[in-house]
Length: 193
Image (cartoon, rainbow, N blue to C red; front, side, top):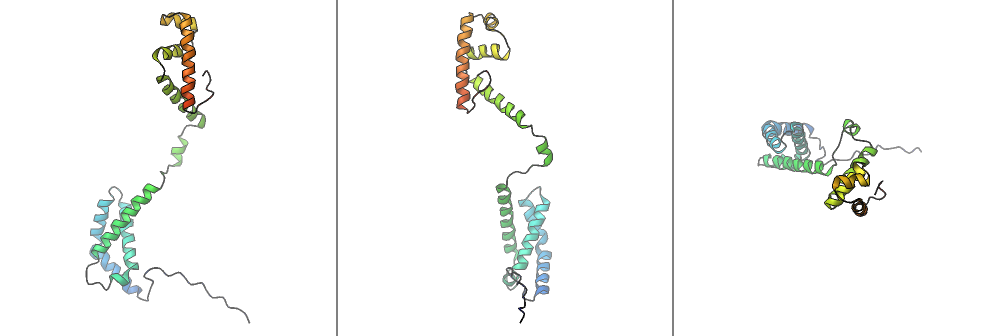
């Protein structure tokens, strides 16, 4: 005897159809006619500058009303407070979902980013500027003259009006201080330091 295969049952959703499709549809159409505009205005104020999102939230609200037909239809009171509460909760959920999701960028924005080498050089430049700011002014001045402007020790000494030995001493102390500051920031082996 051959086994017959039965079709898998489709999962039932909340407020599953009970053969009253037309009644459900008519109920939701009446709800929309009576409360749709007010609900859209309300949600539009909660989600300013995003009319498409407001329309989506209103649509989801009425879809949930369709699912909850069995509890909403027999009520003697207006379903308006229920609709507005559901819409407000959907707005809150939407805001939370957007905050939890990381910021998305387009392909054009990614293409405009600098390459890794450029980014590394920018970061290193910022670290060097921060490290220079922590030096004593006399050490920073000697370091800039010798390393940045490319002057020799005697040239820097003549411009600064100090003996060449003082330039050497300040240069030595400045380089040690720069190494220490850069090491504290996790940078090792920078050329010249």
